[in-house]
Image 1 (tube, one colour):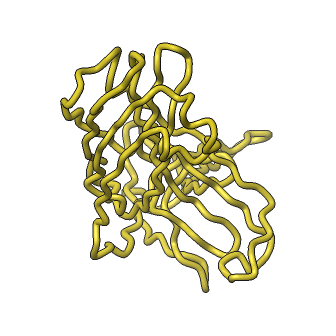
Image 2 (cartoon, helix red, strand yellow):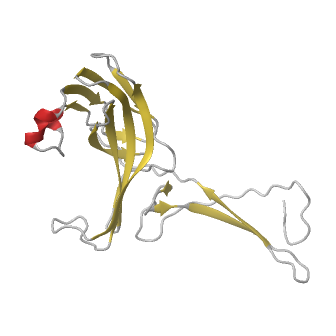
Image 3 (cartoon, helix red, strand yellow):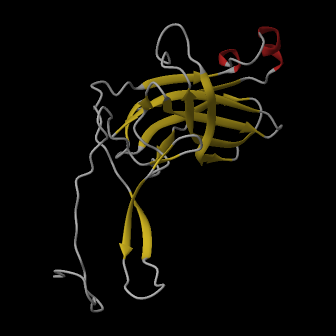
Length: 230
């Protein structure tokens, strides 16, 4: 054990520990690396050296903080159906021009624990055109709010809102078999996800997209907001 200043022999380990506490009036946020929002925790070690014009040696390392959150009572499973009439960005008069297709599926949870995989299943009932690929996409939606009325009914004053892809998994390759359930299984990546956060100054929310690409160069996307917790 080192009791004071002096020479440090090689190979000596100096254990330390500290309690990670939030600032007064704040809550502790989990480590998160985003586009607009970043939460980082670092430890800096400085080795002071004696001698003329000898600078101290300093190094910094990031550590990951995981913060337990309130566990929702209801996992909120969701069954869904995708067909030409369910598409939100298609005009009614244009629906008849879209080749027929019918996809059904379910999400086992839309309130999801970060410690467990995201699961569900998808089944292609019919599709007139050949399918090229089916993908499961995880998206983060970050919002920076410039007004304290962000959660009020009067609206928000958003400085920036950015939806970016975290990861994209191919769950079906080629013209998949009809009426065959395809499992959905996705691990939430560390530090690029965190418990859903909604505060007066910023929000970090998450969504899942099911993307079906057809061989004739058009694709359909179904969006599902999800809530994450630790």
